[in-house]
Image 1: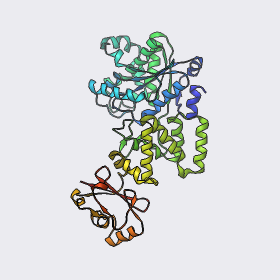
Image 2 (image 1 turned 180 degrees about the vertical axis):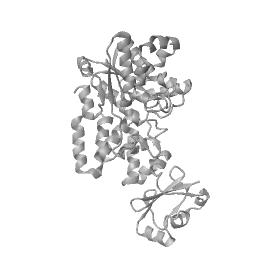
Image 3 (image 1 turned 120 degrees about the horizontal axis):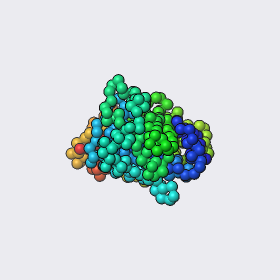
Image 4 (image 1 turned 135 degrees about the vertical axis):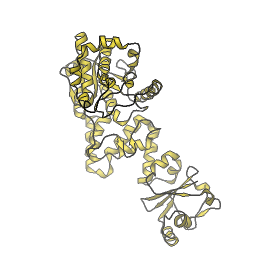
Length: 423
């Protein structure tokens, strides 16, 4: 299957320039996508473009990830309502290093079409302003730049010369890579079409050369909300910003209306494999077969097999029949992630010194039961578990019972939980 055909069945094709299919068919092509280093982690929104490079490489072409050490100092105005704050060089270098490490988890850097990572600061750092406006700026008219949708959308609210010049800088990236590395294709999101075509125009006007563009559609959820965000903000690839459990849950919670689309974009599963999964999912939607496949696949690639195992076990604790042993193995961060939405109680650690009878724990310290009588009835009926172990009415809890030396997990029935913190 050709790269274009691959994009089309996956729903990843938005626009392309005439002739691109022909040059892709002629043999391996070098193509690149630029990444904005304004954060020290890529988010799941960036994964659309990362997977574009993955599919590009799997079709036999050479992918190049351009990390914008120079363009990150300017800021892309494309469809932004306000100018972004400019970052200092040390922050940018830190962000670049972090993003590079994440990209290396997706792309193969060996072999004849091994991936490359380049930084446009390398060719801009010694270029003076006068050289740039003389050798580059003279080839693109102001009228041409003003006609770009990314610029027109900002004319009423105002756009600085810094941001206005962004398309020239990105355009020069394409020219530089075309001239020095033989790169003939730039890819990106549909919001980048104007910047990308400025590059193809520079190549044509400066050197009479030909270059091409492909863009992907912007991903939105079926309900119209923005992909990649939750109530708590962005979903990041960095485990310090978004834990592996939260990352796994993001994909696991994909709506049925979205998940078939996501599986096509964010995995490398074949068309036949996905169709088989879809058929199984449609027969038993409650089993969430597509969501589980998507969550496992994405988390495996970003965080590795051990993180997948822990995330799956953590999910079973809340929604399944996980054992007390599995609960004991959870690290504190994952424990708090799993139970962040359940009622929380705080009890002084001193109360544990002599041990707390379970009835007092339920009815006095937490009000998990409305009265001691109700607590006793629940216990005698086997309806209460502490740390996933059935509790009897004579049980007493001491510091040795605590999870992560700090917590007790209360459970009533199958789905009612509370977490006690002993401070």
